[in-house]
Image 1 (cartoon, rainbow, N blue to C red):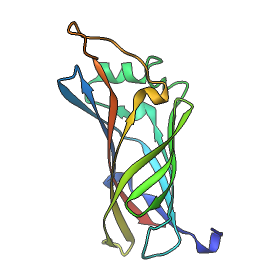
Image 2 (image 1 turned 30 degrees about the horizontal axis):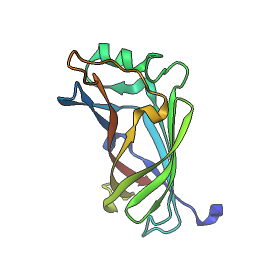
Image 3 (image 1 turned 45 degrees about the horizontal axis):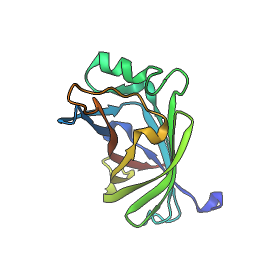
Image 4 (image 1 turned 60 degrees about the vertical axis):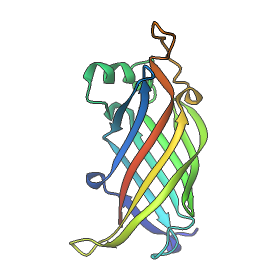
Amino acid sequence: MNDQSKISWKIDNGHSSVGFKIRHMAIANVSGAFLDFEGQVYSTSPDSFEGAAVDVEIRVDSLNTNHSERDTHLRSELFFDAAKYPVIRFKGILRGDQLSGELTMCAITRNVVLEANLMGSGQGRFGEMRAGFELNGKINRKDFGLTWSMLTEAGGLIVGEEVKLDMNIELVRS
């Protein structure tokens, strides 16, 4: 794609969320979010996102599960090691209802496929063009070196391995 054919969209953080859920003690889900992220989407058509390139960075230290002790533990070297690996990065391509690309966490890169649902697009109140996506998927935390584990007395994992991703992204055309 040459520079003249790129249409640039920026993530509107005030109208977007990057969330996740993970099993706790095999009995419930714990939800969390990353509050500080930014990203660009580059499409080749003002009317379609087919083939659009996506580039997103998420700041690990913005992790929030509404429990400060757990958040500190998750940011520590036992999990994300935010001091050593401050950014999670995703680079991918949107094709149909799938966003496929490379997710990098803790210096480990894996291919990931997310379900992508274009919720709609239109003009914002100041005349800017906007588009919204809902993204969902699953990853295994151990694939990214997040291997901390502890068993309950009954033998179940305190923290599950499968992480459900749930993102709502609103874009503003630049």
